[in-house]
Length: 430
Length: 121
Image (cartoon, rainbow over the protein chains, first blue to last red):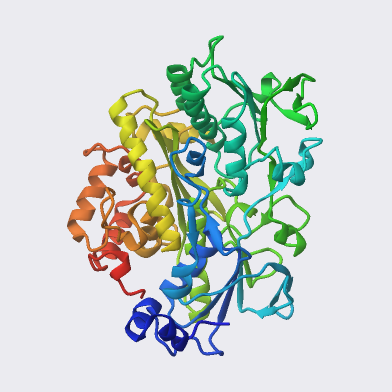
């Protein structure tokens, strides 16, 4: 069902309806072209909003099973009590009311490419002219033997999609015995938000230093190095005795046997690639990532781990009316971040507008100007720019903020990081 | 490839404390590609500066309605490291002067109002 002008008047009164809708009331005729979007995360919601900003008449339907969305950027700070999960939670009210998007609370399950319809769990068939698929990543639980979706929803949360598992992880590590050990298993690339495992460890350490100062955090990594490593190591040395016998945070890279290969939930222990068994009080396995389930179920992955796309316009290689964006795509050398998902979304909206009006879409450029934190007094920035050149996506620039312990600069970077978290969220959902 | 990039980088910049993993290709490499519009460029700024650059209640400065010449001067000063900043020097140096001018056209055409008060189109 589409919200009509009459529905809005009933809800808000006439002037509010006009202001809220922001689009001509005759806009959504049944014959208007129809954009259907699967997934109400950053990529899908940004597509809906920016498409509406480009065109007042196109019908837009967003299919998403959840009433609310928990914003991932900033959610590590739930762990040290700086923010609440409620503060991270947004609704689709603006998307519905101001941007005239029909938000369907349902789960997309299949695509009929010939009939151009999407089937949903409730049995609806929704016809589209263009389909944008942005389901986010899914996880390969059995890459660590013994780990499973069920364990993740129980006492071994990955907490890699902000939500109930974030709260569970917080409860577990804040409630562990004096001098307890937290193991964080960091995944191999690619995964969403590369600095986040280290940010998570830092925030946990900050809380533990005050409440459980003899506790330890052991990061077992499936990579030989990680983004912002010099920044984190500098900060950890300064704050948590990193590199000494009394270090609160210890990091073991893949080259030193850091890769976790199995979990024994009964003895609460993990085994590494070197055959070492490590017992812990809290085990946080961040799983290997893969494309979202919907992308596998609909054949969009074409037998691969990620969805192959045309690098110019993010069109699926399976069907020209289907675009795939966000963490679920194979868009090398792009990293998997919400920031990039949102910029892919804006560009795909331009491409759809061009197709609708028979005009040239122009030419893309995507930035990933992101932030991360190591503590409430230490922020970092990264500036990435991607260009389309010679038939490929090219990384033109990646520059990290310099490492230093100047408290003024680092505090300012924290202010920038927090500012970014707020404005980014508003850019997608307001 | 990486070595060429690094060489480019040393030739063109030669200052700043670069991390080992930093990469920078001068934007002139892309000068013969079709032009990226001011809107496509400008919409990349929204995560920090708000939708259409129209966040007026944060410390990040709004870009909506910014005077064209002011925008160009600021961005070129960031790009050429005349005006030191924490982030904008790195952001600005990715763009050609023509791209900066197109972004200036885009932002100067938007009313200087918070996004909530703007019309969508």
